[in-house]
Image 1 (cartoon, rainbow, N blue to C red):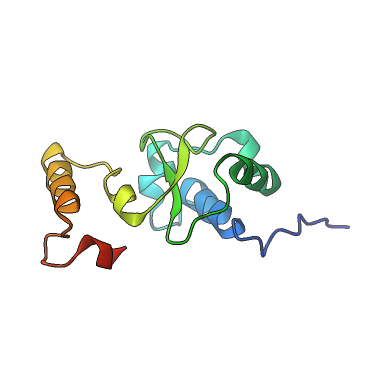
Image 2: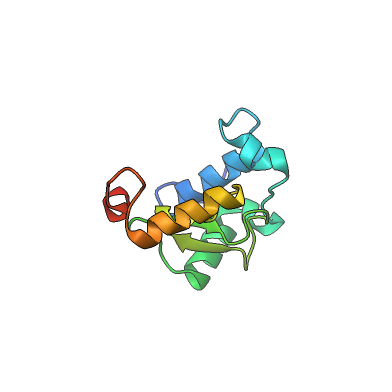
Amino acid sequence: MLRTHGLRFHPLYNTWKSMRHRCLSKSHPKFSHYGGRGITICPEWHDVTVFITWIEANLGPRPEGMTLDRTDNDGNYEPGNVRWATPSEQNLNQRRSRAQATRIRQQVLAGSNGHGESADALA
């Protein structure tokens, strides 16, 4: 008899599923930015129950408007390297040239997205 974890409808289930797909599925559109460049998931977090338990105990439930982010963009999905972050915070934590990163930081600090729109309107 097949046993299931019963967590398919948990708020963090899709976070876990998306993380796994980006890192493990070569057919995922963003695989080259994750698994394709060596980003892995710690072995314990392959179990959705362990992942959800750790996230809830250490980061708490996902705040509105935030998603899971790796603190060290070149690091793995593992304890100590994940946080809840806004789209603006994640935008500052991407692999970019120094010039691009500086321009984006200036735009965020100025409250603009570079197109005359408020950065808050984008979040």
